[in-house]
Length: 121
Image (tube, rainbow, N blue to C red; front, side):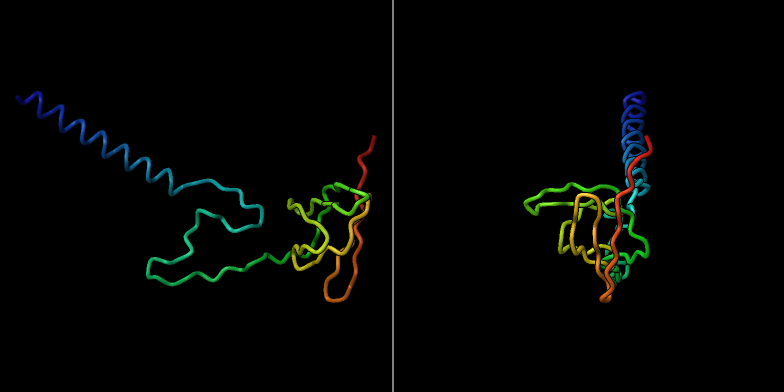
């Protein structure tokens, strides 16, 4: 009888510890946001207030990482890790045009062109 009680108590302790370890693992999630909001961060504080979030992180430097060029106008560019097309905005800049070797952006009436860097061979 005592042995059965010890088995039941051990079982419940094991289940409780397993759940507590599982919940602590969820709280310590690792997420590389790359400048975007961490989706695991709650949007509401414990006292019920909504957190104020910036809709788009303002970046001063645009890093052109790649271009997928199409003569028919369905071109895309990879800028700061995001895929964009003509008309999209990133870091406060709007994509004006995409060519096979450069992307033009506009911000506050100023046009900036960034050329793709070719790898050294």
